Length: 337
Image (cartoon, rainbow, N blue to C red):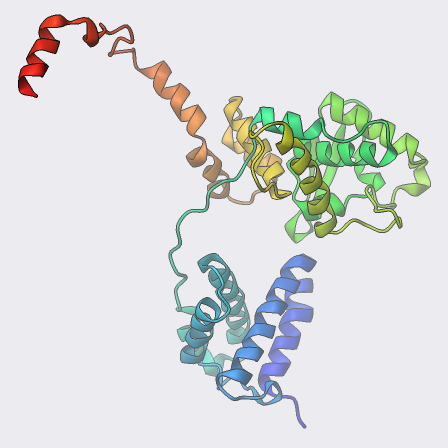
């Protein structure tokens, strides 16, 4: 059976356009791939079109809108997930319209499908006290505990994404003063993040203990599991959840669920509360747009409270008289009753 035009375009989009032209990260490619896997499933189940028979003419705006509704109603996807899937579809059809100009009007109707408004997500983060308690949990007398402490300290100190953490190689760590670590972010962009003294010492001891200091080991994974394989996102989440549960027994300041990405959020919030400039925080986190970083400023109620306290004097005195000792007032209230 001859491949359809949809099959040709989708293959070129995923294997050539995203990776070679757009320099998209593997995670982005996987996310886009998963979107089209869901779309193929929808077409087969709801539109009764087999995957091998789908053509570009089949994929009109009505089908795409039906797919988005199916994601929300039957797959129980959130609005943000629905919008993420739509963004992948928009990207695909923007690519196709340059390859097949004859279908421009048809493709632009799909590109015009708007994203759905969603409530602003809460920036989940830990207080400095909660973070300190969490980092106190690993057993420093055990090699596994020392690895976990180093891992969590690097994750927090650098504000790294989880994927950036598990992608770290030994050669990405530079401990000569000033100590920095090189993180490779979305789009294979590299940024150098400074390390605080305590984290640098932990890393230095960790590298020495695991015999990772020789130059030829620069391409070794920095953090591995017991089988010496690279850690996965699930593995990092398991490590953090284990210590979060231990910390929660000691204090309720640790939330019920602690996710790896909360370390990144926490670092950003703590930098902001310490007076850090948004431009610096943007560069530190590797954000492309300052608008992404501004979410921390909007969520930072503690800094807002301090700003209000500094800007306005206390107009209402806190040492008000005790009305329960005012006998005339009490007599008047009794008459009302």
